Length: 228
Image (tube, rainbow, N blue to C red; front, side):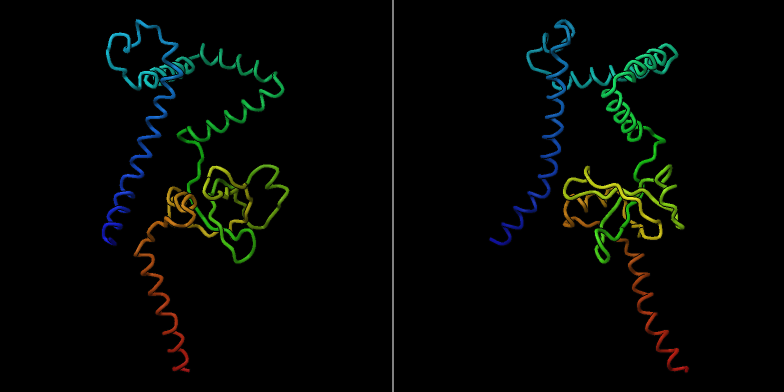
């Protein structure tokens, strides 16, 4: 019975992520198709000529439309129309704040040269002796950096919450108080989401170096005492 139970959980671990990924992907395709297909004329809809529904037609239409929109916006006429539209939105009190915030977020996340989280680290939070994982964003700039006036360089970090890493806290921490980690941001996110259950493997070379340093330390001290 113990072996059967282990086999069952092994199969669950293998099929669980695959099944959930396929389910979410299929749900997203169906959602987009449900939005887009009603707007496609019947003569251009493949479902009109086929006996079986073709999933993903709406998704393909969205991808083509977004690519064409980006192409048209890249020329002078497109940029002019975009600037006119943004100027109109800029006159709307509440809408302009929402639009500017969303635009900045999308530009930061999707822009190839945009600054994103590149490193993970540890900071003592919420008190001394307790450590939390943070994602390093960028050096603190602007009024916040001027008002803090720290001797050490300040870094803007994002402290995610468990199990939802999309929410969290923005902290401004002295660089000397941040312990940078060797693990990638993706591995650190997995650690946060799993509440510490999924821990990435620590490089054996680094661990071996630390073990050697730990072994050499007491030996040196003993040698120094003997020589004295």
